[in-house]
Image (cartoon, rainbow, N blue to C red; front, top):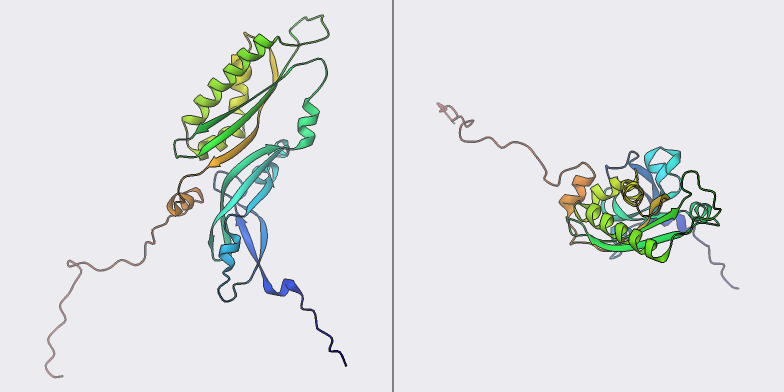
Length: 245
């Protein structure tokens, strides 16, 4: 007679962990992730670390206008049931990119590798489109190849200036209000009027050596444990002499 093997639900062996976003986002608790419970030499923390999660910026900022941006977060430390994450990249949703591309205009793209002040090597991708001049009769708004080269040169200058003069945290804070895109639009007016200037993608190519103290600072915590105060020599009082023991 053949014995029937009882199938065990795999979810009984798993635990839920909370995902915590860095403090520069308005919403800190992003969601939950699942991992197999620690068993023998297999530690759950090792399976959680370096996981990359994709979150919509609208969920992190409580602003539906940011819904076309996707933020990547990487789990770098696990404390209890909390996974502490750091910024890992940014991208546009495909529907937003498709809505920007239209006929009768020029599309200008540029990308540059920049090193932030805290040692992150970041690749920044920008995108821009030409627009009609005031009182323009002509149907098309095509820029010449020479104008495209000049605009791309301006893009390189602005990306380099804005990204290399700040750390990763400040760079992420510049991406949300589109500081770099507005600067490109403003400085390119003399070459050709632009519209829809965005940083469409950010990739982290190389990160510095992991520092727990810096990660805890990003999450509004401190690495040092304050503990209890130890009484010093001034606080010490000699006990009274006993008559009998």
